[in-house]
Image (cartoon, rainbow, N blue to C red):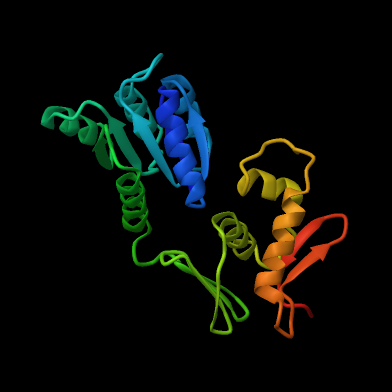
Length: 225
């Protein structure tokens, strides 16, 4: 998932961002209401974690503006304001869920995942397949020809992106922006290292490789002709 955190407290933002990153999600952060509103209405996010007490523009105003702009991204309100009236106001303003501070990260993650399940509904694809390679997005399981493949969170995110673009050439810039959340080239071999590890896990021991390097262009996940 790609998640936006709108939170002005640096410690809370860093804590949530680190946990979501370790769980394999790409995270953007805004430290005030104006920046949060801009990102929420111009970016593509699977969920938004929104604080209520924000500088420049309060959380409820951000939420109302998001909904007025016809953005239906699920919003989890995260706030120290935990009275019943506070929660009701947040939900009526367009929030999908409300979690009070202090909170356990495991509960925040579970609530975000529940929001995504409710949004996806029964018609949304939850299993990706390329040849005999299969990824269950809900169980976070990957198998090839029935053999279980153990992936680290970043490897899972990388493979998910490749599978969603199966048969296409995926460039380094696309991977940096969508898997690592870099909007610049850090001039490191991080992509090469992860591609090499992923290739070892999904192709080693199988007759037909699926992960191919396209010279001068990028990578492609496909069955070779």
